[in-house]
Image 1 (cartoon, rainbow, N blue to C red):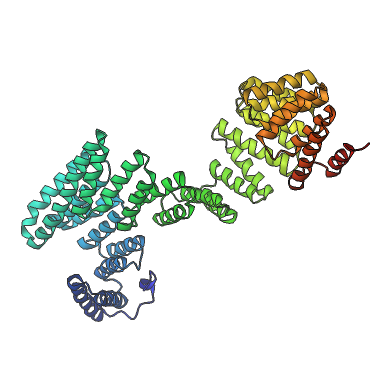
Image 2: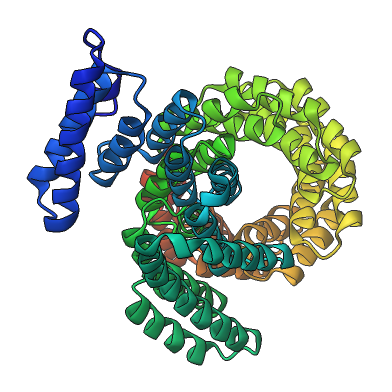
Length: 552
């Protein structure tokens, strides 16, 4: 049977037959509770459905059928709640309808709604409300055990427990069942109380051992493995934390709080385990809470997997539910850019910028949009305008200033490039990139001495920058004709990056100028071999230089 079973067309109303099927269902239900035979469970479900078909106004069939079908996994908890609400709509004065509805709401960890239903049952039952009162007190105690409670929760528990206990004297069967349940809950409460005390004083190993014992003795592993997982997370034992959260979900797959924790830990500390994190978020969608945020997280997980289509789809679903969210627009734009759908990316980047939730963040978005204009669309003017807007939003955004300088450099506007790189150096004099890039612009402008100073400063700040080492060598070789000094920097660049084709070529040029024919030949040959992979140079030019080494 499926969730659609209750929605099939009903037969002609026949209250007599409906009562017959209801009685058969009750008997099968009782046999199942005693013997736990699946055959009895199936019969009970079938009889309840038949009872509903013959009399759709019979409330008992709805909530009992919902309980059985949910237990078998045939319907979701949301569907079970809806069926119980149907029973309430048919019989607002039915105590059990309210109790069953509250039961399922409590399972979904919607304690507030559950308590409202239990209070409705108390209101309907009046003086005969011992069972609803005790169930409500038990629900409050479970909330206290699983969440941080306040004073009103403790007062509410005591009030409903004491008043329910007084009224229980007229219901011995309920008293026996309740005593068993409340005993178990008090045991959980005691372990929790001691465990939280140990945690407060950072006695984590002792608390962990106590929770492990509690998980075994109370059969409430869901609560205590959750606590152990939290301790492991505090101690940065991420593997153990994940293991504990998985155990919680084995006991209760509907524990939304732990699903969120597990998804977050996996997403943050186990980037290679995207599939399990995605599964957690997809299960969270069933709760229909914070849906846009869940789609947003799913989109990022799909991006990690290079699944461009699903990432775009997830971000679009988030935007459908919250169209004016700048972060969702930004992420969708990024996903479009990854898929090389640049026009769509531009549209959503522009919308994110227009929404402008924060100047610094929006400046970063301007940088992303500017790079698309510059690199993908070749629209230099739009790129410059966008970068300038980002700088106005955040004058301290070093990266966007560098990007603006790169655009000027690409369009060979050397004066503006030098000016912009100097702005970056003024903003952050300890970052080598500004000096390295300014050195290139200065060199192109034939400001040899200034370029020399700029490259030296870049290397002082970052000696491992092979790019600056090679460029400084070029200045010495082609600007100052100091071949020996130049060769030293080319060799430094090669040592830092053994696959640096241009550095080998330049080292060959310097060696050739110094008359080191064999060294020059070796450098040129290495440049030829690497260039077959990198394609950075014209191979004919290198071959010509190599052959000329041995010309008479």
